Image (cartoon, rainbow, N blue to C red):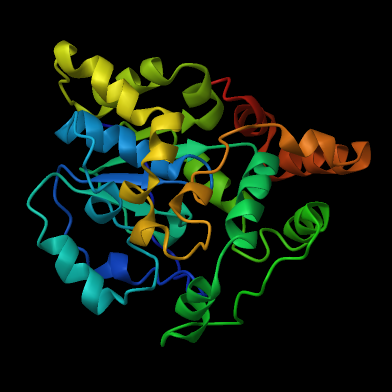
Length: 301
């Protein structure tokens, strides 16, 4: 008798100032769909750029933010967004920040989950949040359909931001540990690939080849050098309006602030030894040793 492999099942909806997970209930999957998933600020945009350039490039003018929408972002509402996604004729690249148990799972689609140390996530998120302008707050807080409290401006101190994020599990965005945990549980499924931000930084071409093999994308070698160039952090920051939602209109400093530094370890200058020990203990408690090690270093998978 053949052993059946457990597959993810949607058990709940997530709706808040950012999310409307119900859109996944109405999506008509295609067998070649690609879903890029992260908690947030973990290399999502970078991975979308890599996939788009390998599929459709090399092309410096690809409008990746338009080609690869964040499906569960509640603005624009699903009544507007879903027909746009259904009208796409190319191989679709969809983005999500949902935990796996709030997502409808397709056994045919390909899923790429990108992880990053939670402390690095917080520092990147603080930059994202602290530079957001009134349009960002209006879209998230004032448009119809928000569930729960509004998102508020961040404190002036990044360590306080980290403390709030730790003490209230992802505040003011959404829970962190469950996001990693729900994906990690299904890491061995053949249509899920785990990628780590640190490994992308360490060896982007090598990680790109891993992704291409997983997605069954044949990249012509004569195009490889240009594709790698267009996926470099420096090139993306310089041309950020192509890959950042709405060309960066939600940040007064423009799209470049969305693609910030791509640097890990900035928290080492600010967090106390007690903060660090607390984070590491919490990671071990929430995720277990294997997942905690992978999240911190990218090693072990």
